[in-house]
Amino acid sequence: MTGDDAGVPPLAFVQLLNSDALRPDAVSHFRRIIAREGWSEPELVRRDQQVPIRWFREVYPDLDPSSATSLGLAFAEHAQLTSFGPLSLPLVSAASVAEVLELLGYLPVISGALKPHFHMTYTGLTVGLAGHTGDRALDCLVVAYGGAALLRLIDKLSGELHALTLHLAWEAPATSTEAASVLPGRLLFGGHASFIHVPTEVLSVPCRFADPLAYRLAVTELRRTLERSRLPGNATETVRRAIENDPWHSSSEEVAATLGMSVSTLKRRLDHEGTTFREVRETLLRERAIVLLLDHSLSIGQISHALGYGDVANFSHAFKRWTGQSPSEFRRADNQIRAE
Image 1 (cartoon, rainbow, N blue to C red):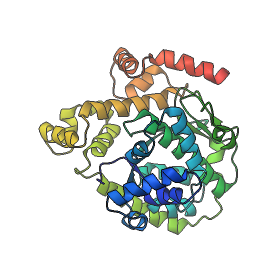
Image 2: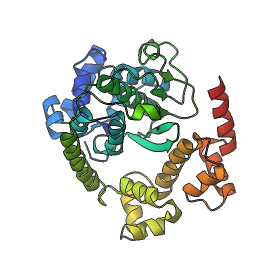
Image 3: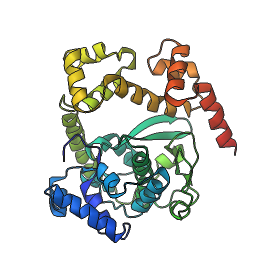
Image 4: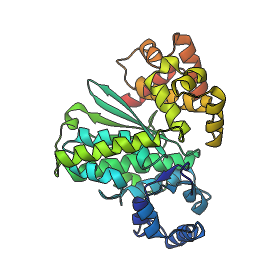
């Protein structure tokens, strides 16, 4: 295994292997892969190294978005408060739903497969969810799993919060019962984006096991761990962060200068991680644009400016290239979905 693999938390994975969520033949296949890689289940947990999401493609070679969604929702049913390594202690000790959601900012510490984007409005918090596996079906798996697991964990900490909803940007599995049984009435398919909506009043709902000191100490350590992961050895995350911090100065030359390296060095490091500067920048801006467009109180001009575009037409052209729709068309389709 390499540190560059998009993966899942090892304890969550081992708990999954020992649950009834997987067929026996799939469990056997996963265990053969673990042995082939020279590992054991206890070693995976002890080393606390992400389990590559590509293993799921190996075990499920015919996986499509529908079956991947079913798997993700089934897996979410087995998520435990202890499943998420260094995020587990602050998760349990959080004082409110808002503090639980704050921990999503530290998700890269335990998984490179799922990226959150946050946007606060007067109606509440929107958390955009984007898979980063390089495989559409696996993206559906990690988004369905991550979103559903989070809502179930919040329910365990704060009681069932029916106003907290998970929206998924594809149709419900046609031959599965998971969609009906997991988060009934709170799991909405066929949206224009994948996101969690948290109404303002839900953010302040208290959690059952609040321990402010434990939470504060754990978050301090998470912050240190995240900073270490963003050293130049992890070029993709470093570039994403630089662009997020200053989208107006996000050319490869400007980002390389900010990071204290040459453009050629930055290109070489991104090449080593299987990506390019343009791919990283456009992926980030596309994900951020989608979340902002869900907030209808923002004009397209305001969103364009927030993403570093000096001209609305340039932003509109880029968004249509990314999604096949202009920002206005995206908004109209979103309005139609909300009205249904």
